[in-house]
Figure 1 (spheres, rainbow, N blue to C red):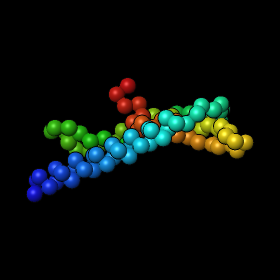
Figure 2: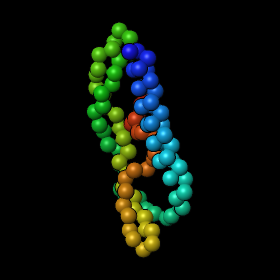
Figure 3: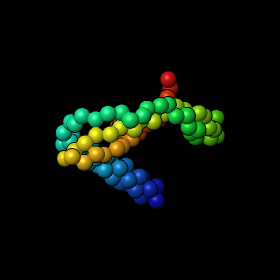
Length: 95
């Protein structure tokens, strides 16, 4: 039973890694285009933090995250977005 669980976890991790790899591959084919920052500010959010060892209870803490809005044009059409990285943003973690 433990072997089956380990195989299921390994399969899920492999799938997640494959999906993220495909996303990065798709982004590598994008051409650069000029754009402009519409707004940028720091946004405080409360996040759940899991403890380790004897302090394994969950707590929360306030972290700062960038809130960026940008605009660019492709083929005469204007696009607006806020995602600036493929990586997960952990806020000001261990700063």
